[in-house]
Length: 108
Image 1 (cartoon, rainbow, N blue to C red):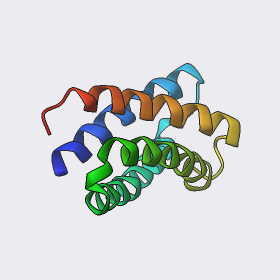
Image 2: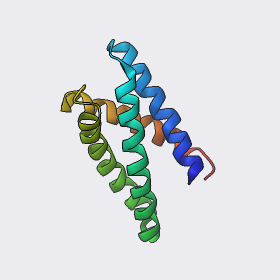
Image 3: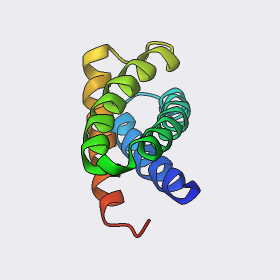
Image 4: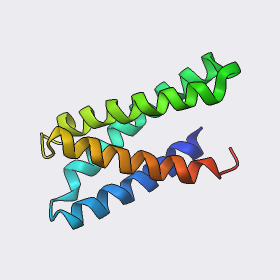
């Protein structure tokens, strides 16, 4: 579990950093917001997957959608509203797509 959290933080942090450079925005607040949001959502994901392990893929798919939306809101709130909600939704989608794609192929 710790390994997956570290990979998620690294991959999604990299996406945030690239986004910040591309949008010419300071990365610090977004990286901090991403870190806090990811720790929260990863814990919720682990609990949910353990509770509904018999329906792993369905639970994972539904949880990823919820995570995407929750992280979007958290990115807006925790970054001192450095992002609008539509931009946060886009960034969260990119972050989660990248970490999910890489995570899918990791031996966990």
